Amino acid sequence: MKDAEVTAFVASRGARARYVTSVCTGSLVLGAAGLLRGYQATSHWYVRELLPLMGATLKAERVVEDRDRITADGVTSGIDFGLTLAARLSNEETAKRIQLLIEYDPKPPFAAGSPEGAGPALTQEILKRRAPLIASARKEAETAKERMGI
Image (cartoon, rainbow, N blue to C red; front, side):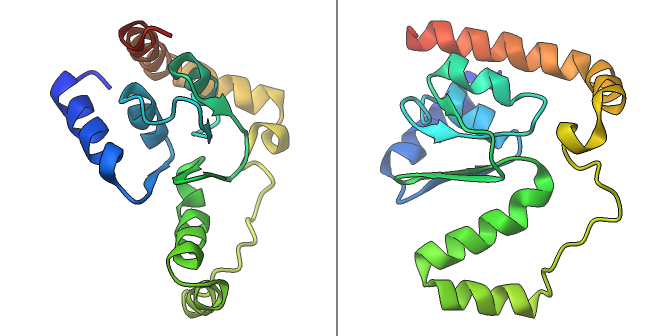
């Protein structure tokens, strides 16, 4: 988000890509490159509120598909994202085969994988620890917003 050359590169590649995709905070890079403007998207829970600053419509889901854009929230949603993309590139049956081959049948040991499950105290602790990163991301999102004239 901070490097204009990288952002321009991502924008140029995204403009001609079959699919524009990201997992976790990668959607902030896509947003800064203008590739999510007018699209629904998601990101990691502690920065996804920044997506609308860059013209995206926030949809707080694990995987969000909007036309040729596919975004996924936190890093563990990468497998969900991969299976979603496999179904698009091939078909649902192929994606199911992959799911079985990798034995993807998650059963987390704790119900703390989202702010809703973790509860307010743990969520606030994480937000406090990540405050510098979140502040930096907000600054870059606001800079991108100004650059795009949003």
